[in-house]
Image (cartoon, rainbow, N blue to C red; front, top):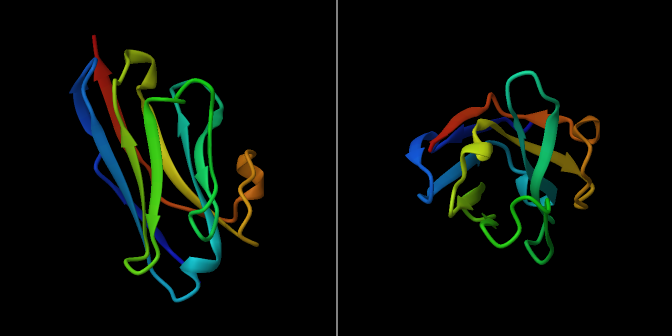
Length: 124
């Protein structure tokens, strides 16, 4: 069973950058599509970005296109989310998620694997 552990969250000023990492245990990581979701207080968990098993396809929510970049290193069993030009509305808990089958989907219910989340706070 693959387990996911996020890191890299923190407090940053608007316009700043952060890089989140999600380290996976287990030998089947490379067969999983991976995604980042976020959840702000009182709101639903929303899709942020996703990447196919090979890294050849990436997908982004409209709200982060051009600012965030998702990538993965299958040799290191790690997926990353580079977040640039951060805005206060990006403040949320960010979750790493994985699904077998290799294809990115955008509903949380379609992902079986979840990390514990990492807090990102952007001050104005």
